[in-house]
Image (cartoon, rainbow, N blue to C red; front, side):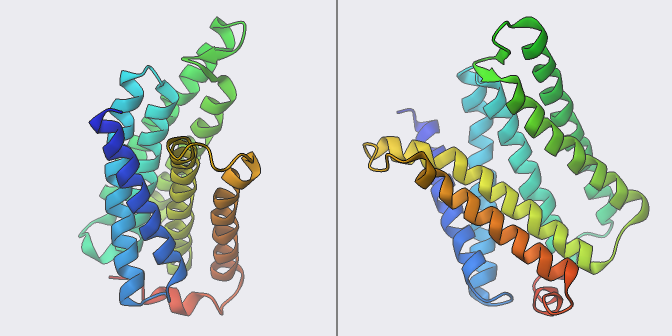
Length: 228
């Protein structure tokens, strides 16, 4: 196993532990903030290693999904720490350009897989994967553009923080779980059990989005967390 792959798996594992802590602990607590910081730093390191790993192994989709995940973490962190930037619109515009570029490449390679391969594969990955993540990238860029042009209220800013962080965590789990299972000698044989943590994170995301956007009750605790 290469040192870069060891670094990738280690930082991913640390990031996911921090993410679980941030999800589990009371919003606004020191533990929540610390877990969130560990998650962000770990995910940035994980995705920074995922990109060269993907390129070295000619795994184009993995490299681009690594870039997308890094963007989701960065933009989610910015949404939760808006007061640290003098002009947050410039930051979001720059992030939106990154998302659009990644999305354009994903769609381009998806089209290549459809047109140039009888099996609809590009570097061993199905066209559907390129289009799926490409859609996420392009829609995220569109939301960045909406924010830059018109802005939105605090409730939607909190929702932006939530879905981007949780989606990044879901991608991280689905990426690293099979590798850890393989390194441990395949103790988990069921694909359903391997996918279950990702589904739990997505359900957590939906629940909190509902609390923030559809009810007034869920808004107050988060406001104290996502303003400084």
